Length: 204
Image 1 (cartoon, helix red, strand yellow):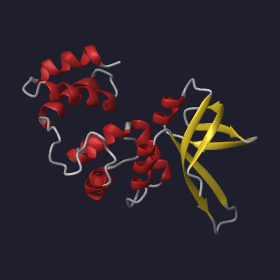
Image 2 (cartoon, one colour):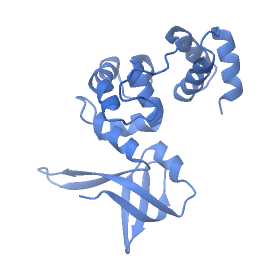
Image 3 (spheres, one colour):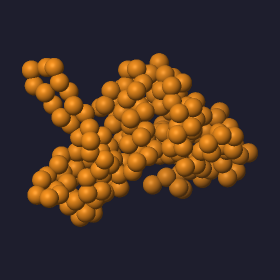
Image 4 (cartoon, one colour):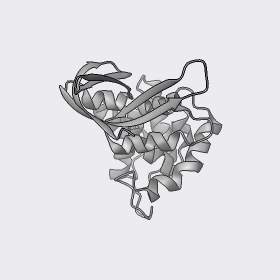
């Protein structure tokens, strides 16, 4: 079992990283989160999830690489959910950061999860139901206490309206939601229009 690969980053695309160590180049499938984390680096350490497929005409051995253990653990949890395969899990982790995904699952925000390409409402709800307790009990999300008792709640109606408005203005849903949630955590009583105005100044 490979725990991690540490070596020189010789090739990098948004979907694949090639890491050379001891004269061997390992190709690892990566998410956009990991791509962003390692972009511009010469030496990297990627935590590995191995997939061995046998029984067909051609056996295959695939490596997935993650910049953090947290992201790898979320990936492993996602693929335990019925209807979520490896590529779908990688798509989720390319659309949302681990922190965003944990927040979406912990608050039961199936609408936000459904914005990920290939995720329907039933799958989104299944992910939330199956993983809500696990991400807390395993301590994956640093911002979530083990008891789940001190999570800062935000007004979901205001949040949804603000994210919807920002999406219509051309901004991506996931980054918009992150900014909106941060604003509402700091100022819970703001009306939608003020949240949108503040978000427009902060979204990059």
